[in-house]
Length: 70
Image (tube, rainbow, N blue to C red):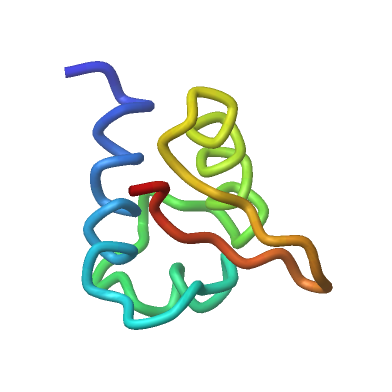
């Protein structure tokens, strides 16, 4: 599986379980092992790419919050 999508699947798993939109830092903190993610910025970059494809919604604010686009 392509590394980018494997990483997205991990992030998607966190968003599926979330009761509300989360920040990239909250998502990173929710991952049991986040060795594959260098920083909250890395999480945000992956989710931003998924948003371009319509899979994730990015909510404006400071910081941005993310939720699945269902």
